Length: 341
Image 1 (cartoon, helix red, strand yellow):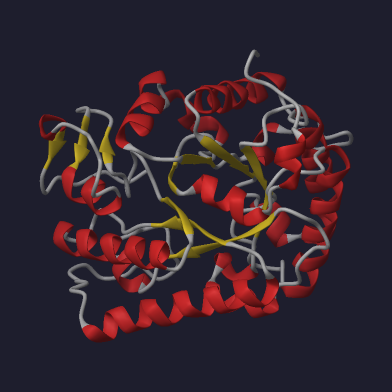
Image 2: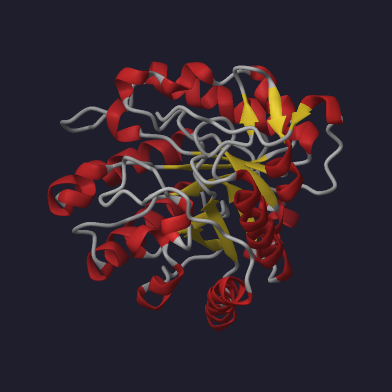
């Protein structure tokens, strides 16, 4: 691995705001490594996808991983080396293209249903990951858990997240770590977040508001939203977004911790023009407030790229990267994903 290198003195002198700027404008590899084990979603990821991301102008990739499906259920909770190797290859491909990489723990539902029972396993998995990646470049970031919810209330999650961060710091003293508020990483839960005593922390929030628009027609939500809900960019719609962004910035200033929007996107059942307007406005608001972002996601049901027919969805790509250099022949207008995974 010729790209691996130890942290330099210059790296160590940089703060979290620098590392957040390295995330910049990013994308998620959704429905890939975080898919259920039996679906083997990782098989859809191809080498050319890394080139596509880089050539479009993205700065980073977030790689959600369902580690809990690929680790032992009894001590020492060993991670399956074959699966680990697949994730390693994806990380290396991204790093070799000068993309910042965020690796998280995704969909650990058992932890959220029974935190006390799964705490030891959760921390053991992170101990293994921290040791495994300790010599990787600092362009690889860690995110202990995606969307803590359920029985992971504020008190329990704050304690567990702090344990994970301190454990990571034993072997990765300078690596950027993305921390999360409870309640699906919602901005309005930032007030309940206790910040671990550690350097180089970035807070990651998710933004899917209004939920009735972004998740209309989605069968996986508890109360499926009806179809036909539009987002037109009215004064009231914009005001709601602006107020939430201001709340995130206010929290950031108070705690001197930068903000990343780790996920935002609108499901493909919404009309494309509404998706375009909403995506454009969220991206503009994030950038105006110094917030890095990772759109959800590349090539699935929220996706900006059709991997079966090999084209970019023009409205969404241009909404995210208005200065992209992708040839118009590689884009198609008003296209949408019609299958659900």
